[in-house]
Structure formats: C-alpha cells, structure tokens
Amino acid sequence: MAKLKMTHVDKVYDNGFQAVYDFSIDIDDNEFIVLVGPSGCGKSTTLRMIAGLETITRGQLYINGRLVNNVAPKDRGIAMVFQSYALYPHLSVYENMAFGLQLQGVDEDEIEVRVLETARILGLEDYLDRKPRELSGGQRQRVALGRAIIRHADVYLMDEPLSNLDAKQRVHMRSEIIRIHKRVGATTIYVTHDQVEAMTMADRIVVMKDGVSQQIGTPKELYFNPSNIFVAGFIGDPPMNFIEGTISNDGYFFNDNFKVKLNDELIKVTSSHINKEVVMGFRPEDVICQDIDESVGIKLEAIVEIGELLGDNRNLYCNIKDKRIILRVNPYVPFKLDELISFMVKYENLHFFDKKTEKNLRLGEIND
Ligand code: ATP
Image (cartoon, rainbow, N blue to C red):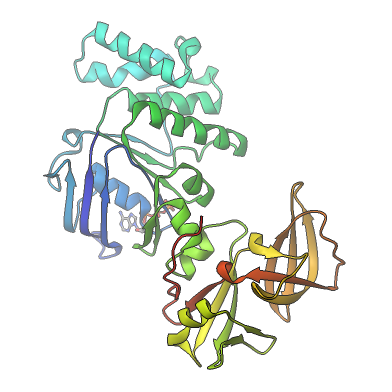
C-alpha cells in the first residue's frame, strides 16, 4: 500500500527536449491510475521517472511521504511490468516467477509459498512446469504480471502491458488485471494509448498531450465533463462531434449552415462568448432521431453518407454541408443514403468550448 505524490515535475532529456511539463498528482492508497494519451505525449517518461529509470529534472516525487527523487530504483518499493515482458525462455513458469526472489536472497520455502499464492491469484497453477513457449500470449502475460506481483511492492507500474496481445486477449486481460488489483490491493499506475483501456480500468485517468497533463479525473468526470477539446475528442469512441460557430446576443448558436436556440442554462454558460467563435460538441451516442422534442434540445439535419451496422446499434456517417459528423443510433431508426436525417441533441448533452483556448465553457456538474 502506498500513497504517491508528484509536484511540478519536469523532464528535460539530455538533448534539451522537454518531454514532461509541470506534472502534479496525488495518488491514494490502492488507486488504479491510468496515464493515457497519444504516442509521444510523455506517458512512459512519467512512469520511468517514478520507477527511477529516468532522473527528475525539476519537481518532487514522494512515495509514502518520503522524497525519493534521488533514491535508487530498487529502494523505491516499486515493481514494473513492461511492454516487452521478456520471460526467460529456458526457465519454467515457476522458475520465472521465483527468479527475482532468489536474487533477493529470499529462502526457498518462502519462495514456494509466494509462487503458489501468485499462481493461484493468476490462475497459473496448472502451468508451473511449462516453459514460456508452451503458453498462450495471455498466459505469458500473466506470468509477467506474476513476476511483478510476487515482489509485494508498494507501487506497481505497468507500461502498455497488453500491447503484445490480440484484441480478444486484451479485453480478457483487462478484466483479469482489475480482478488481480482488487485482490492484491496495491497502488497501480498503468500506461496506455488506448482510451477504452483507460475508461474501463481506471479509478482515475490522467490524459496527457505534448508532455502536459490535460485533465485528471474519474472516467465519468472525463466523459461528461471534459476540460477541453482534446480530452473531449480523445475520450469516447466514436469521438465527440465538433461544429464551429458563434454565439449571438439573443441566445443562438449559429454558423453558415444553421442557427439553433439555446436554453437558459447554455445562454448563461456561453454568456462570456457573445459574438465570439466557439466550438459546439456532442457525442455520437447522444443524438435522438425519433420523437424529437425541440423544447429540451436542438434540432439539426445532416445528409447520411454511410450506415455501419454494429449489431445493437448503427453508426451513421453524415455531413452538414462539408462538416463530417457521426451519429450512433439504434438499428431500427429509418434512414436513406444521400438523404437528410433529422436528429436532436438534448441541451444537457451539448458542450461548448472556446475556439482559441479550447477550454470547456460549462462548469456544470457531472450527469448521473
Ligand atoms: P509511446 O506511447 O509512443 O510510448 P509516450 O507517451 O510514452 O509514447 P515517451 O516515451 O514518454 O512518450 O516520450 C515523450 C517524448 O520524449 C517523445 O517525443 C520522445 O521522442 C522523447 N524522448 C523519449 N526518450 C527520450 C530520450 N532518451 N532523449 C530525448 N528524447 C526522448
């Protein structure tokens, strides 16, 4: 169990490139934190600074209240699972898991107890005598996790641990890791570029872009209350639709293609932006095509270009003039290709962003 705190951490590499800017976070005992963002945004650098594999250029890192900036990796009480988990091919599953403890000089009886306990948690009891090549990808990944868990660390760090698995195994291992986290109950920091992994696994998510933390919050907070256009577009699949326009002084959002009346709450939210350019956002799943009631939302029309049936719902790829948007509708909603479809979005599901700063204008509460 461990609390971890980072305050104003910067990372500047030897070549002068700054990979992380002013990163701060307070992580509680047993929290499962996911760092997510596109390639090169500084996730791994942040994790490696926590591990002690990279120096911290500025700022502080505390583990359980102790400043550890200059503490050697092995003395930080952390265990790390890497992307390429490289098991020892000539050692059995048992030996792979025991290896680290043997190096630490733990006695063999204790090692046996811990290997068996770890194997039980991970469902690997039947594979202890096998060599890595005799295991599936998912089983190998579990052995790699086992090597980390067996160390009884205070903090577990995982850098894209599922990236070598196929899509189905990833989904399976996602829930496995969460299950293991619940049982082992240790503070975990997990890096991924996959927002679905972040949404489904995290207690709290840190969204990063260009070395800067954009927002830290629960999956629900990020989904309903994204702090800016980047987070709004990154979290959610298909991504949020964005349409540019202007706020009029009589309570409308308008552009060259349409004009829609806002309700009192949104007039208030956008009141600082009258006659200024804003971006309106709405999620594909928040559109309603039947029983449209204009007293509770805005009505728009778009031309359907492609319909993509996914089973329980359908993605309609549409355009409003040249602006591409995606509507996620139930499969029974009638539509015709190249024809107009009408839909509404409830006021509560509309987001407004400043076009220049890209910040969310709504300071509202999280919807339940
Ligand atoms: P990915 O998802 O691709 O692994 P990431 O978000 O983990 O990306 P980092 O590996 O932290 O990103 O890299 C952040 C930035 O720092 C990148 O632009 C990368 O090129 C740069 N970088 C990483 N290591 C070094 C280094 N040793 N020297 C200089 N720049 C580096």
